[in-house]
Length: 111
Ligand code: SF4
Image (cartoon, rainbow, N blue to C red; front, side, top):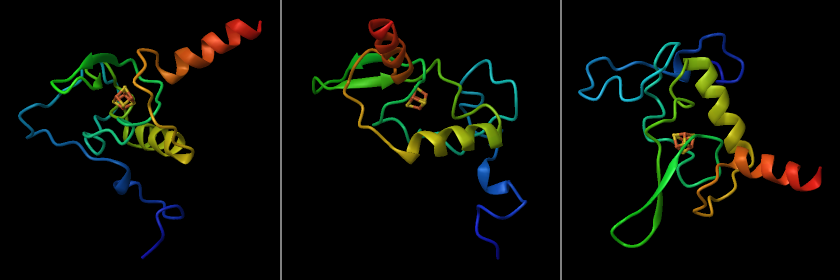
C-alpha cells in the first residue's frame, strides 16, 4: 500500500455517484463530477466560492453554496482545491464576501 501523496492512482481524489437522486446537484461542471466533497470541508472556513449568505432559524449566518462548482469540477482539480484551502484554514466570519473578494478589496485599499 502506498501513501496517498506518492501513489500514481488518483481514485481517492473523487468519484461520481450517478445514482444519487440529486445528481447533478450543481450545474455547469465541465469535468468529471466529483461527489467526494458533497459536504464541502470549507463550509465553516473562508473560501473563494460564490456563496450567498442566509440566516438560519437560530439567527446564524450560513452559506448557500448552490452556485459553487469548485469542490465538484474534476477529481484532481477539486481535490487540489480543497487541499490548498485546508492547508491554512481560517474560520469563516459570516461575511457576505468570499475570501477572494476580501483579498481583492484589500488590494484596492492598498493601491
Ligand atoms: S462556496 Fe464552494 S468552496 Fe465555499 S464552502 Fe461553499 S461549496 Fe465550499
